[in-house]
Image: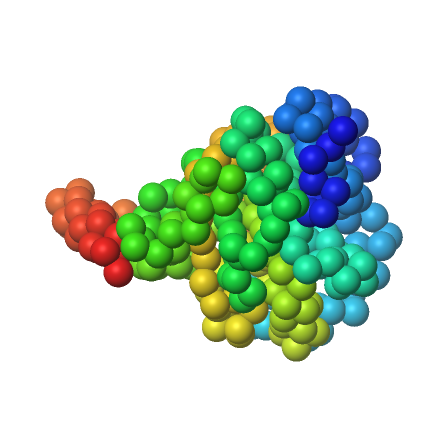
Length: 263
């Protein structure tokens, strides 16, 4: 019998992606986690086109060049948020269907099914998924501010919080969902994993991070998002830094990440 009837888990997945659904369902069943599939919004669908056309006119200037798969990804997560609100859920875990994990996720979910008192409203609890990103390990994690859930340490992000990217595995509360939807109403489209805009607009106050969920390295063959970004950036020249300067900047950054641990 699933152990998390008091703590919902949503898996965002295209209805047509049977193979991914079967894989993630087996992973969750193996660790005894109950879950619900939430049908992702397909950027090729009429539903997507209708929402895109009505929202584009209000889009923040920074995000006018978002690709359609990026827009659809944002809309899919916002749709989950709306369901969390409609069902008056206080907290929920949101997963994307291509993540991988082990029994430690079950320990976290089981603990939160018993009690969510360790969670603080206005915070996002990210469970990993940073592998392969350019910002991986470029944020500071506190050694002082720690929340222990199911034996897993979630450390507060203290330096460069916006460097925590992706939305493949995270815990959110109803307040977060309300603020994120409000931001969409006022700003139009934004990247759902652009945590800088989420901080700047009071969607959340802090991030706590642990690294128990992994995300596959994305490429143009396994990700519509990555393919759309590659196509968008074709012909864009990126100026390369001098090797020595790049090394010095990287070293300085990592020292600041280390110092952030003591905040």
